[in-house]
Length: 409
Image 1: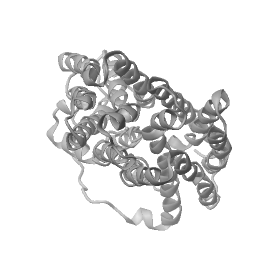
Image 2 (image 1 turned 90 degrees about the vertical axis):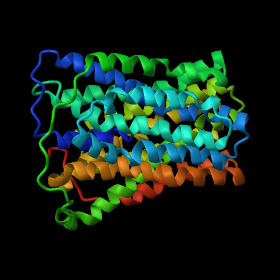
Image 3 (image 1 turned 30 degrees about the horizontal axis):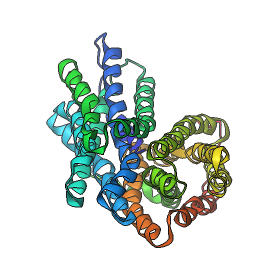
Image 4 (image 1 turned 180 degrees about the vertical axis):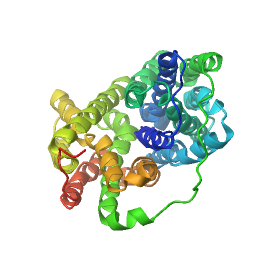
């Protein structure tokens, strides 16, 4: 899933490559475009499971707990494991982490309809997550070195390409399964195969980075700011829970509870993810004007009325509530990371991984199966009420954050 874990890998690797010289070749823009296309398709596949859940539940007779376990496993293999692949790519300097990842993710995610049973589904989801996790650390490191003196712009383009892919994934897989059926959804892997061939033919190895002299985590800078760091971490967890639950269960909810055709239900997820993508961009800019604390507070309290409107109403009013609620909720995607980096500026890579990758992955690993279990007993609609009201607790945490100022450097 992005899968907003993308940002974690991006921030972590961006911090790691600060000492690395940018690529000096004139084709840096071309390399960035190639990597951005790779990121687009990686995240296209990372958001596919939510769109496929209604079909998988019907085809394999899954309980909602088992469906949630699939989502939790994907969060683990695609997000929690990212630091492992970052460590390996740093030391092996093997461009296959970037080049082969779209093919691996595309094949295993697209072949879910071929699984003979639930155990095979688990294996395919896990292996698809391996491709997603392997791409982000090395791909981000390479992308950040493509434009001389414009690393921020390069990362912005790279991040945006993944966000667009994340939003397009449900619609893409809905079209494929509606046209060919889940049994032949393996054709959806074709773009992943093609971009892998293009990357293999044209993309050089990423620039080598100097080895660090220190390999241990320095905890001393965290101790004076431990309390606000803990608050920020749980705020990210709260936001991630809502985002991940919606990403995994929204099509299923609209299909089972509201009678939407499976294809239409998947488009609703695309609507929600598009709002979230816009929200992340707007939130980062608003934080520069009003300060991160105010934006986090507003995001937590401001998203609840619209998410409640989504559950209480039907038709276009409900969809508007879902879109605006997702937009406001995801204001904080870049803001939380920035605030954490300001608290511990000497450990920016570590806090980025903590705030995004680890928080996102653990939220998905633990909460999605539990939500599925609750939905089995109480229904999806009632269970969603417990999720959309969680930002109220987040608001109480946000007001305890230290004050910051919009004119900060």
